[in-house]
Amino acid sequence: MSPGQREMAEIDRGQALRLLGSVPMGRIVFTRHAMPAIRPVNHVLDDGHILIRSHASATVVSAADNARGVVVAYQADHIDPVSQAGWSVVVTGTAHLVPDPGEVARYQQLLTSWLGGDMDQVIRIRPAMITGVRFRSQENGGAPGPLRPPA
Image 1 (cartoon, rainbow, N blue to C red):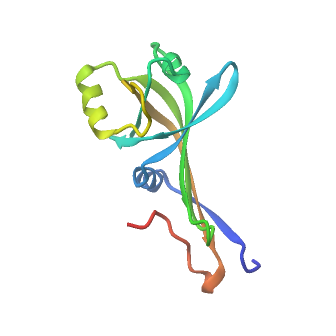
Image 2: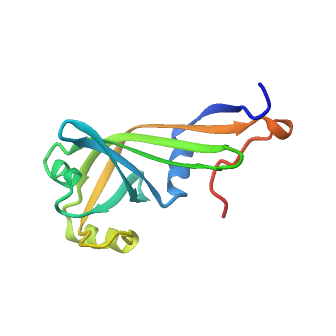
């Protein structure tokens, strides 16, 4: 491997969830007008589920508001811009609106929205498939790059 190149290694489901829980934001991927749409959102991980807030008129909220829910992907990462080492996690699963007002209130406390407006909907993503990779630099004697954001 030449200097400056990276090595990619898969990480297991447990480590992928721990890494996902260590960052405050990611990107939700859903379908809008039969095309993929991606939005940055903040999240919280609770009991293996990803929870995000949104507003009532959001396309993903409309799609998630049915008995079947909607298939989405969720991606989060932490990659150092200098060393280009770090990790990326992708979750594919089904998103449903959280219907219970008590749960909604609890998650609204945990998920302070960084966008203005009425972010009164909470969406729960139930993972069906979780994949993760880490990128390690082979410079400096092959020392691995960071696997999580600095504290």
